Image 1 (cartoon, helix red, strand yellow):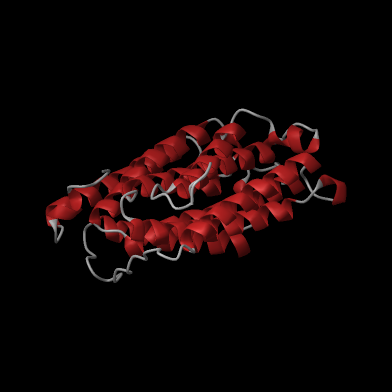
Image 2: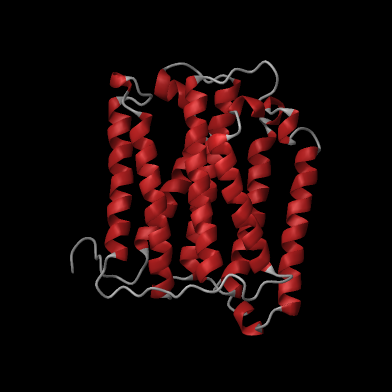
Length: 290
């Protein structure tokens, strides 16, 4: 097919588009007052925290998928699998946008914003669906989870994947968002909706980790761990200015934030080093990041 958009190109532009829009949306949310844009009233403390976490989560999702896409850009079978994961993530994102609702009918978004978000999310779903439904699409075979476990990045990715799933289920059903906030801070309706959107973005991150666990080799798993380090550093910087609004239960106040940051980074570095020393195949690490 020829024309302005070549849907048959081997370049995984659909995944790059998915990643770029997440990153763009996240960075746009950092400097602006989203509440004023949505509701006409400036954000209060709980809404500021949820907006910051939502922006951070969008950058996090976009970062993971963009790194994995670039790493596998010349591997069509893996790109198909990653596109399928992204399609599921984009569908969840689209449904979440639907539930934001038009402000004319009791929702949060102004009509033009809601229509724009709906069409943007729908276009992402359609182009990803087009990628995975190609007649000649190759599908990578799933790797056995138990194979290759040990003191390495695969084990750490497995741990992070399980923890992310547990966190998703806990946030969706068992944890009151008010528990995250410092005493006396109110959880508004807008903050509560933003909280739910963050949970959807957490699911998108889980799908990226699941792809890495099922279909990546040592190089891809190491690259994901390296990405974790960069994104965690970015998250710490983003959270620092609003940490006074978090409850002690979150463990992000004062020096606790930097202690947790140091521990996680140390574990990631240890997994990378141990994997390179004890990995079953040295060749898998030679192409990390290529």
